[in-house]
Every structure is written in C-alpha cells, then in structure tokens.
Amino acid sequence: MSLFYKTTFRNIVLTLSYTCFSVISVMGNVTAEDYIDRWKEEAVKQMMTYQIPASITLAQGILESGNGISELALKSNNHFGIKCHADWEGGRTYHDDDEKGECFRVYDHPRDSYEDHSKFLLRNRYSMLFELDLDDYKGWAKGLKKCGYATNPQYADRLITLIERHNLNLLDINGSEAFAHVGRREAKADPVSNTNVREQQILADRLGSSSEVRSARRSVGNLSGKRRIRTTDHGIQYTFAHSGDTQKSLSEELDMMPWQFRKYNNINKDHAFRVGDKIYLQPKKNYAAYPWHRVKQGQTIWDISQQYGVKISALIRKNHLKVNEPLKPGMKLSLQWPLNKKGELPWFAKMVNAKER
Image (cartoon, rainbow, N blue to C red; front, side, top):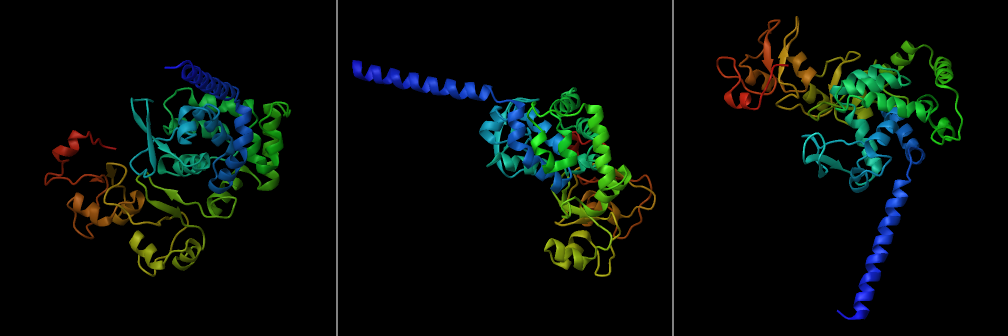
C-alpha cells in the first residue's frame, strides 16, 4: 500500500473514531431532565387519551430507556422494554434480558412506542390500575410491579423516586399547564408534602372528592371525551357500556355496523346493554388467554364467553357440553384445550404445562 493510501486510510479511521467518540460523549451527557423536556408533552397526551398518569409513563420511559439512549431505544425506538408477545405483528429485535435472546418490539418512531405502551396497559392484566386515581402515582407504581410489568423487586421504588425527584406528579394534575415547571431542576417546586396538598385541592376544585373523580372516569371513559378501547390479553378489542348506550348509538360512535355488535357479542336486536357490560368490537377467538374457569353460581355459557372473549361454540366443543346445557357451580371448564372423554387434558396439553388457573 502506498504512503498516500496509508495516510488517507489513517485519516479516515481517525475521523470515524473521533466522530463515534463525540456521539458517545454527547449521549453520555443526556440526563433525565433532557428526556423529560423531550417527552413530557407526549406523556400528557397519552394520559388524556388513555387515563394513565403522565408521571408513570415518563418515569418508566426514563428507567426502561436509560434516558432514551439505551441500545433498544436508539436502534428500535422502544422506550418501555415491551417484548413481542404472541399478538405482536410489527418489527422485532432480540436482546438478552431475563432470558437470552428475548424478542422485543421495534417501532418506526419513539411516539409509536408511547402509544403502544398505553395500549399495552389496557390489557386485562393491568385492569386493577384503572381503579386508582390519576394522582395516585405510588399506587400505580406498586400496581405495575404487582401485575408483573417488571421482575426487578425495586421497580416500584425506582419509579416513585424518579417521579418525586423531578416533580413529575405535577403533570398528573395540571397537564399541559405544568410543562414549564416540570423537568429542569432550576424550576423550584414545593416539598412533596405541600405538593400533595395542592394536588388534592386542585382535584377537589375540578371534580370533587376522589370517589367522584373515579366515578367520572368510569362513566365517561377519559378526560378527552373519547371512549376508551381496551384489548384482552389475547388481542381482542372491547369497551365497557356507558349509561344510555344502544347498538345504534355505539355503531354511530365507533363507526361500526349494528350487526357487528350482535355477531361479536352473541346478542339479538333487542338486547339492551347495562352499564359496565363488556362489549366486543372484534370477533371472539376459539381460545382464551387463561386455561381454566370455575363456574360460579348463576353463570351461563354466554357469561363466560363474554368474560374471556372465547366463542360459545368453542367452549361447548372443548368441554363436551350440550347447547343450552345449564352449568353447575364449581364446574371446571377448559378455555384453551379440548378435553378428552374423561374430562381430562390431552397429553399434548400436559406437555406444555397447562396448569389450573
């Protein structure tokens, strides 16, 4: 190799090395405050749509993405460490986590990661969280850990520490009005005890007591006026009936045909929804996300079909039932596997460790 080419090659290597070093150095200086400044508006937007505290969303984003500069965040735009799961149809990447080579979701933009994070928490697994008030960030943090979002035993404590260190709980109350006061440490905030008092007063002025806030959230879905659409653990969209809902009003609101509600929910034209009824917006599946169900007093096959999002015909077939056969309390129904003539799981189901729920 000539001296000219050697010199040119060396200069290219030095330039690339300097560039990489500069990029890494800049990334190394990214702080939690930088991340909050960049993503707090998106977190509030998600809160107004899905009723998930913005403080929780931001704290999870900080923790899971390492202030947005983790390998998963930079290469895959995945800020929340969400794994693929069976219903994921998007891009995939593989990283070592709890196990070697686990599959994680890939997004076109970090905003897509925020949207998917919100929809991910609408699964039945996390339904207990939506009984909490929006300002109860400690309850949400502990609830996420209890529901199994993360395996780290300190997960809830770490979220709470991040929220209180950066005053993120102000976003849960003031929303966009708090943007100027959240994130940067030079923006002084009241001590936590005083902040909590102020938050409670704001809620009282706006909606009344905590029970009234919770009641309002249940009746209207969310603060933006849109109906909250949930997703079952096995990927079926549904919503809960509000006061005054009819097949006609729902079809107009959700841009669906009345026959779809009847088909997806096994109801007739005269069926009247009760407040709190689960209403499926997509066809049920031949299996549920859970293996077993113990029949309770007064339950029908339709009740169980609605509870788990599994077709009535599949329940009848798997459990060797007769159409319109009354169910006995305590009866154990298989929701995933067809039982043999003895009412037992087949050998292949036992091989995959299908345990009683």
